[in-house]
Structure formats: C-alpha cells, structure tokens
Amino acid sequence: MKNSILKFGGYSALAGGIIFMISHYLFKDIDMGTREILGWVSILTSLSFVFFGIKHFRDQLNNGVVTFGKALLIGLGISAIAGLAIGLLDIFYVTIINPDFSSEYIQYTLENMKETLSAEEFAIQKTKLLEEMKMFDNPTFAGVFMFALIFATGIIISLISALILQRK
Image 1 (cartoon, rainbow, N blue to C red):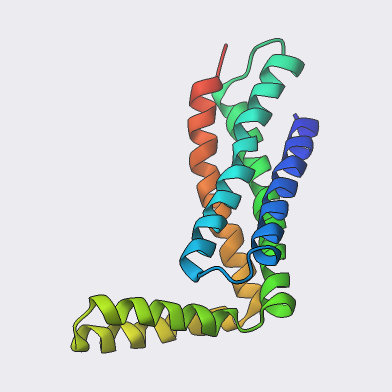
Image 2 (cartoon, helix red, strand yellow):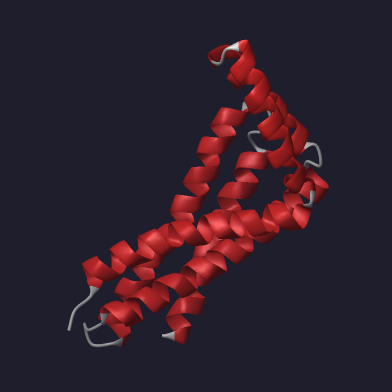
C-alpha cells in the first residue's frame, strides 16, 4: 500500500507540477480567467492518479481485492502528496516567479465585480476582498491554502474512487 501511495503520489505531483509550470511559462500572457481554468486542469489531472493508484493496488498488488477503507487511505495519501507538491510550487510561484500575483488577482477580480455589481455592493465586496487578500500576502498561507484546496478536492475524488473500486 505504501509503495502505491508513493508511486502514484509521485506521478500525481509530477503531472500537477508539469501542467503548473507549462501554464506559467508557456502561457505567460493569458488572462487570469484562463489561468484559473488551467489551475483546475492541473489539480484534476494530478488527482486522477488517485483512481489509478487505487486500481493498481487492487488489481496488481492485492489479488483484485480492496476494501473501502484501504482504498480511501490510498486515495488520501496520493492526494496529500499532490497537495504538498502543488502547495510548495505555489509558494515558489508567489515568491520568485510572480511576486505581484496577489495584486494582479485583486485587480482582475475588482474589474469583474465592477461590471456586475451596483456601486454600493461593489464598495462592500471590494472591502471584503481586500481584507481576505491580506492573508495571501504571506506566501506560506498561500501554499497552505493551495494544499487545503487540493486535499479537499482529493478527499472527494478518493471517496468516489473508493466507492467505485472497492471489491471484497
């Protein structure tokens, strides 16, 4: 079980990291909305290895049998490795590659809000956004947030995969 977690967790981290780096180096001039979509593609692609890791363990290492609990543990382990890798990449990104990311994101969000909200609602939402984004000025918080986002998504994928792949 441990080897499956490490192997597929590594694949997961590698896939997420490659898409992350490609999207930030080859597509530098794309808008923030497209970057957000590429971010989710990166997350979901890396977490697809949860399913494959559980399936590999069940079919290749455990004689076609895996309980829901063991499948869930494998999925959570793979998700944790993916979350850690992408969280660390996020810290690297906001400290070295694009230290202005927070201000760029605020500007992008405010422009979108200005188009859709009334003046009063815009003022309220702007204040709220600026308060929330103060936490993201700390790169460690940004990395922990990214880990939590990926791990939470991984929990859902792990539950679904464990339900689909369990065999007694």
